[in-house]
Amino acid sequence: MNALLSAAPLLLRRRGALADVLPVIAFAASTAIIATVVGGAAAFVGRLPAGETPMSGEESVMGFLVMCAIIASVLLVPSAVGLGGSAARLSLARREKDLATMRLVGGTSGQVGSVAVLDVAVQSLLGGLLGLGAHVAVTPALTRLDFGISPFTVADLLLPWWAYPVLVVALVLIAAGSAAVSLAGVVLSPLGVARDSRVVRMSVIRVVIWAALILGFVVFMNIGGPLLGGVADGMAVIAIMVLFVAAIVAGINVVGPFIIWITACALAKIAPTPSLMVGARRLAGDPRAGWRAVSGITFALVIAGFLTMMATMGEATNPEEAMMFTAMNTGGLLTLGISAVLAAVSTGVSQTARVIDQAPRLRAQHIAGAEVGQLHRARLAEIAVPVGLSSIIATGTALLVLTTFLGGAPNDPMMAVQYLVCVLGAYALVILAVLVGSPLVKRYAMRAA
Image (cartoon, rainbow, N blue to C red; front, top):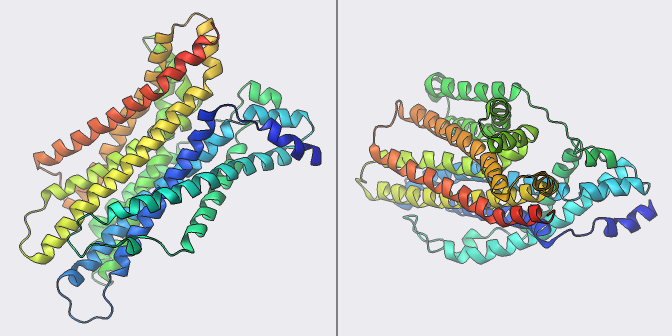
């Protein structure tokens, strides 16, 4: 064991600055977003009035604004945590060959796995500390946002000092746990890594679970909510509704890989061009990675769909309504902005990481006669399929929630225009992510020439 630990730093050598920076960036973004979102929600909670005395002005709407802040947190925090988990799996993928080498020098699966998890934990710790720095740096700018109420101070938006080490430790543990779980799907042996032996398990249970959540939400909103509202506090009904919405949004990440897998398998058989066939086969071989590349964009589109509901609101008739509308508009745009940052980091990291993962295949395909342009088209097909599917899933989910809330399909044309702009922005984000990794495709392919 001592020899293994002594050899670990050499074996887990850094293969390149970019491959090492990507997970750290993802961990930093995850930490910064979680700290900022939780700090903002805590600031609203801190404004709640004490007691049950008659309230007016800001105090009268603070309960509603706290509920909105909690909904935004429920939507954003799980996705940010998911980004951290993806970063852990990305960091682990960078080390597979080194881990196999450690098996050759006498390490057991448990020992090698421990070293790998420790390596991920160190990267997550570094990213977490950088994320806290970004959170503190951006907080003063957030105090200038107009929520229609008394402006927040920096002290309001910062968490208690003890919350920051707790947050970093929690994210490190999540990253380590995610890496440990990911090791179960990788054959850590020289032959297993050389053959890229992975276990791809896709079950229709994913779709069944998501469909059950949607059915439960529709039934609750049409039957359970009105019945429960007559015997329970209105806040209890709202809390259940929020939990259903959060579960449906989280369920998208459960059903997404399965839908990509089914679609990719079908496209691989009927693809009219070699580039589409290659891209489809890559997706079928690793549907989870294909979904991770667009999961952030899907979430941003769902948030954009929720925001379109604000277009149906009329003009304020009193100061309290003006406060609510201003707060919801600012808070909604801020939520969309944060989700866009989350999507940008997730998409950029995932796309660049996939190019690094596929470097040996790119070299082999180029040697076999594939031109660099064909490799680019195959990569474009590999991302275009998940993006198209994510757009359909996000639009359907947002429309479902909106029609359930509004009691029918929205008929305001501005809602469609606003959502279309968000969709085009998501596509622009994907194109940018593809362009960022494009030089790497040529670099890895031409090394074999």
